[in-house]
Image (cartoon, rainbow, N blue to C red; front, top):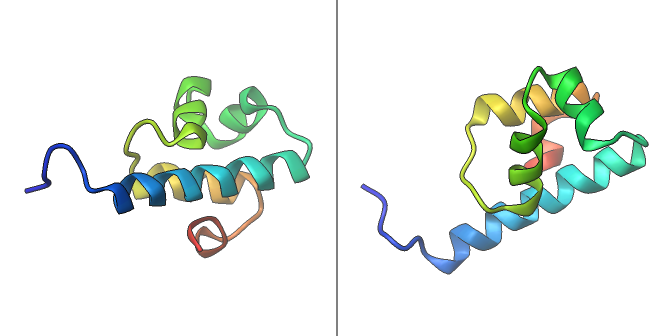
Length: 77
């Protein structure tokens, strides 16, 4: 069971992934809203992932990677 609060390295990992999602999205010249539409997600979900404020599922990251024509590995490296 996860500890509460989460360790700093987990929060840092969330932020790195969010930064990478944002970087690829902006490279593709997409808004959060457009990425959300392409991924079948809510814009708030995309925003939360990019901000690293909430945990996300691997499913959401896979949908985002597909919408960005990127690999999941590229987003989490």
